[in-house]
Length: 421
Ligand SMILES: *Cc1c(COP(=O)(O)O)cnc(C)c1O
Image 1 (cartoon, rainbow, N blue to C red):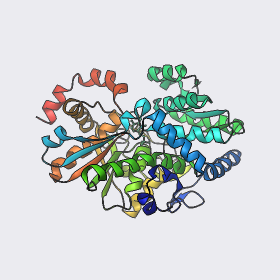
Image 2: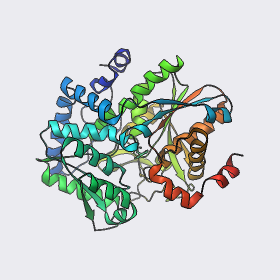
Image 3: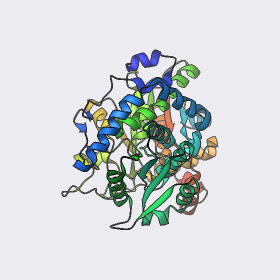
Image 4: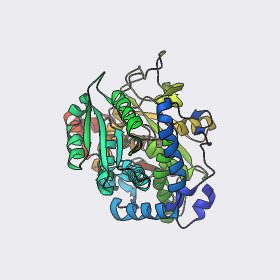
């Protein structure tokens, strides 16, 4: 099924059937992607790739996933027209795809449910992953509970301390959170520990990644499961407005909510923009704008645009949004930028936080700080363009962020006074 066929099909959830998209059979999107992994992991990755091709394209798998999305996740999520926010800046109309209303409050469950269902069809008993801020861990723990799978989540001791509520959530859902106590005790060590466990246990389990990153086939699998977001949004936008949006945007951490939104729009006459975090400034360590400052390189087992030093180690990155501080982008994003099909822009912490409060106060929607980056871009766009429309992927809700935001910015009035009024 090509993208065009897909758009003409009633069954937009059948999107996983497409065959004309990248990557090639070795997992490359043009120059980027691939699988740079130790030999001991090769059998495990070959097994997942083969199983994914066979199982995830079967009618049985697709119909089960579609039913789960409807009955458990609450899909389709709505499309919301932000009249108040739009009116504030002229007549460009801002629309949100409401992934904050997906069960667990963000888009991540879309790929976690798919990955866990794949594990079940493969006859695996367990799924394993690492988590940094904990949101991937919580989504995966949810999926594991739903499917009756065991779940081991590797997490650095430092992150366990910082993200205590997410640790409690995972444990309540029946997941084993395994502290990683060596090195910096954060995400990097957790990735190593999870891959290590996977190479030993792959007969009984599969590894579930949290974004469109990592070695092939993960960027492909996660993209396909996330494409439901854009597929729904395209249908909904056309049926409510009779038109296409002029521009579609989404925030970029590793790039999963964005690629899911973008894929169904690639062959439509719309501008597509990925929004990266410029944090507190342009110095190394103050942002995570990999498209702006990164270059071609290999990190975490795949080739893409990444921020690494001379020794190939990840450079320090920062964003006020814990889900956006990744020192690279998924390989398909690098490819789409080279092709000129998607443009990448950035917003600062302050712009994102201003958008956070504007959306909360004008629309009654508290966004995740990650998603506020995409909203900030939409506001800038609306101010500049004055007409037309922009569709934003609101990747998650902000309940998880309110204590931190309140500590830093109070009720937001000062920030709004400075930047808006
Ligand atoms: C994890 C996360 C992101 C960033 O991840 P992507 O893979 O780039 O989508 C964005 N928004 C929310 C709410 C998240 O939890």
